[in-house]
Image 1: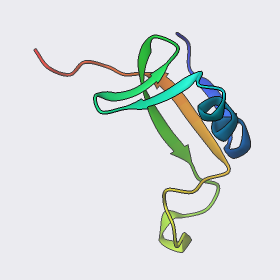
Image 2 (image 1 turned 180 degrees about the horizontal axis):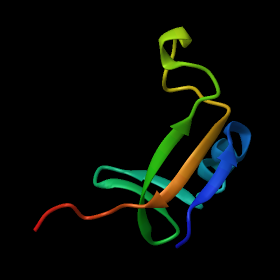
Image 3 (image 1 turned 60 degrees about the horizontal axis):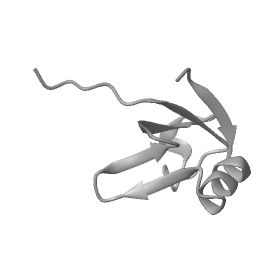
Length: 66
């Protein structure tokens, strides 16, 4: 899976359409475990809610365990 950049509304739609799933073991895009990264256009010190962003990056979760 390549990285995807989606808007806040697109992210909500992906969850609503069950393309993105929030499970107890992580987030899944189709059958791939992913990380969801907020992309902020302002300095985070000026943001009252860092969980809200206009855009998000979806990327395949890297397994850092060896």
